[in-house]
Amino acid sequence: MRAGIIGTGYVGLVYGTVLAKLGHEVICADVDENKIQRLNHGEIPIHEAGLAERLQEGIANGRLRFTTDLAGMIRQSEVLMITVGTPPRDDGSSNTDPVLSVAAEIGEHMNGPRTVVMKSTVPVGTTRQAEAIIRERLRARGVDYPLGVAMNPEFLKEGTALKDAMEPSRVVIGTDSELARETLAALYKDYSDQAVPFVHTNPETAEMIKYASNSFLALKVAFINEFALLSEKVGANVIDLAYGMGLDSRIGPRFLQAGAGYGGSCFPKDNSAIIGVARQHGLDLLTVRASQEANERHQDAMVERIAESVGPGEDLSGRTIAILGLSFKPGTDDVRESPSLHIIRKLAERGASIRAYCPHGMEQAALALQDCVGSIVYAEDEYSCAANADALVLVTDWPQFLGLDLRRLKASMRGQAMLDLRNMFAANGEIRQLFDYRPIGLKRRGG
Ligand SMILES: NC(=O)c1ccc[n+]([C@@H]2O[C@H](COP(=O)([O-])OP(=O)(O)OC[C@H]3O[C@@H](n4cnc5c(N)ncnc54)[C@H](O)[C@@H]3O)[C@@H](O)[C@H]2O)c1
Image (cartoon, rainbow, N blue to C red; front, side, top):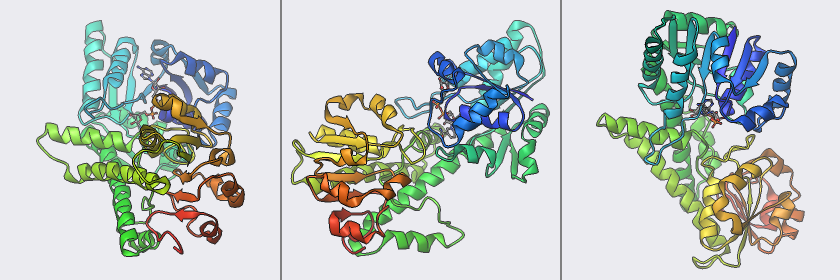
């Protein structure tokens, strides 16, 4: 099939690449000329394992192209996927303007039957709103083409995005349109061949499935983080606790690893958006609000924990804190709503000097942390990051950190404190001898 992807970000780029791999002809369009230029030169604007190879494969076999000519792409594609961003507004609601302006473009330029697939995460009602805009434009042009519109939420996870998109846990299709159902059945034939479960429903339910999934996962993270702090008070071990809980198949082991709080481009944004949607309908999503509040409180607790390790006192002037990991999770360069950035800002506000290192998130972090320019230095590697630091804080669990030479790390530091906010080194006996080791949800010494 000829597929057009509108919005070449984390979702669009991965999806375009996967559809090309599945044998479709794909054109990816974006308003960001610089991004498209880089892609046309084979340069990948994001870090995602395996993406570069697959992308180059798609470009080389002619199945994957990039353009800023949205109108041209709309005219050439049978199926159009909307994957533009839906960032939060100041009040936390989702800004659907990008999605709706794309819908208007589609209505303006489509010249034959089209299926439009909403992949962006959008508040309930937006898919039908987008369809109404397209139909309105067609009416204004005095033309009438068969049109199918479906909400098809995306569940890929940054860091394993390619695999997730190749082997999705489920495909949710929310539509009333037979055309859209048939087109998506053809587009996703590979998934049905793999026996991936399909959920056929209406657009509203498909929109809600995405929010409910993310809010639930965020809740699990906020929950285990609260129990991590309680574990410390009562002498329990949160790793064993999570393991013991997760063996119950009703609970499951995933998303029960204590950390510095959840972040990323989806959980905080989607929580705020669905809370807002509920409010509009006179409902208070108490559990979702609680997870959001608990997460914010947890991140602040991590800041206090770090400050206390180099303390005493509020003022951290003259203290140097080394931060390992800036991306919101390993495997991605995405720093949107990363707990690291929140922690860095708060420590910098108190006068601390920050040294930071991340295998892939430094470029993005430097853009996002413009407000901290005078307080932060980006290090070349983990060891230079730790140089003269009073405390070393591991925020994101990049696997390469496990291979660090702990003695060398310690030797370059001024202080003793090592805060392991992901419990990466909890099973490592040496670390407790070398550092004032402070994991999360475990006893500080002796585990
Ligand atoms: N990032 C994830 O892990 C993830 C997972 C599932 C769902 N989602 C959802 O998918 C959507 C996209 O997320 P993302 O992380 O890929 O966003 P992103 O910010 O990485 O990419 C969005 C892209 O859309 C482009 N764009 C904006 N307006 C445009 C327009 N009018 N025409 C063409 N291009 C336009 C931007 O330039 C950008 O390249 C969001 O709704 C998000 O909530 C994201």
